[in-house]
Image (tube, rainbow, N blue to C red; front, side):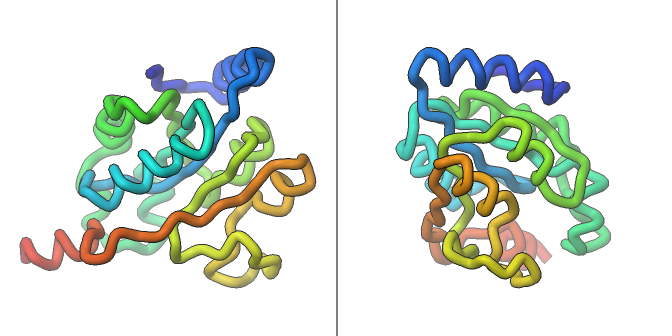
Length: 163
């Protein structure tokens, strides 16, 4: 696995993978305190294709998400390094935009994945369940998939237990 700093580098890798017949899966998230829910989600995401790209929210974008003044607990490089160490992950990139839209449309993965609290059939971009980039991936012939969340495991619930 390689942690990519520039989208252009990752675009070249994705192009090579697709040329070799690989099926590229993309997901994104904060992945602040790694737990069973994250690992289950990432393993199931990878099982949908042959290569898995994970885009990690930068520290600044996490703060803009409104997850709390103390978040993220772990800085972006630490979060990206931990996710990149998982054998199911093939590439990691950190993004600083509010959404991963630019990365998704730049890479055009074959499969776009989000957790079960998102709806792959939602078309109203103003809804919280809308998956950013889903329209573009479907138009490009790709699939959009939602993976059920493992109940009882979330960074928020872990932090509540600690306080």
